Image 1 (cartoon, one colour):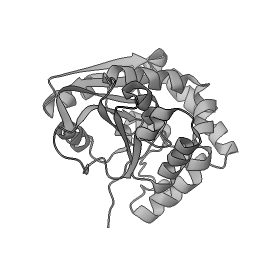
Image 2: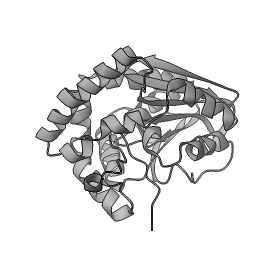
Image 3: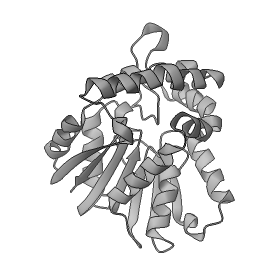
Length: 254
């Protein structure tokens, strides 16, 4: 049976015979079991810590505020969920959803070790971004970090976000930017070939990171993301290029 795929930064679904798409839960979970223990360290190394700034920007654009009920999709080890928790405070509620039990286990361990009282308001849920286990109009804000690029049906993922979001609320979707500028594309691909893959290789994760470049090539541009958001029903959508054009954030209002 072919499973729906939800993957965090920076996996891809290359169709190369040597690196075929992960098609079943067992394979995918085995992959995440390998990545989860070093996932946070790799993010820091590969972005020189800049991913923390980009994630704070994404959370800010979501419009989450004190007392809100918010959702972080493809939450991975929980970075965005923890930032959301700080925004909504102890009176709010945060749900972090991911398809990987191992990533959720890392997130839960981080939560237990954290000292901030507001982090107690986070609930971790194993689930599918294409079939969210929540009622219509349930959340005041939604974030998604490095997940949309890799879901098998981006339109369905946005439709599900639209469905569970309250009217007048926003989604903020952070991912790699597919630039239309040749210079930006060259810099991005040079970084992947000369920094990302070599560093990942030192962790024994060369295969998992090798096809990041092709996954970005197959992703949507900012304008295409804006168009898709409007097509699924969002009132407005705007894509912001950040990190010197290497990253992008789609902000859409219901």
